[in-house]
Image (cartoon, rainbow, N blue to C red; front, top):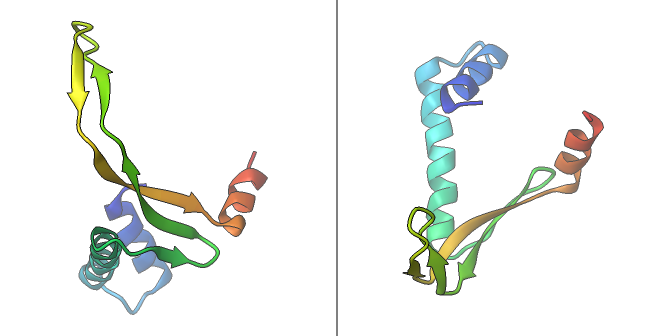
Length: 94
């Protein structure tokens, strides 16, 4: 699902909301999550999951084209852990 499809679903379920308003709310939602993660905070949405950050150590990687060793610097990456309800919903569809 793309962001525009998400906007369409929100508008379809909330007839009083315009697509511009729905898009604004969704953008603000994602911005708030991004901002919290960039400040090192944890974001927990009960029943859905939690967003955290994980530190990846520096390592030596390989260029897949040439096989040459490449130094990959340490970095912090976002991580999502699904909640129990989400895991059960997804597993129930199998």
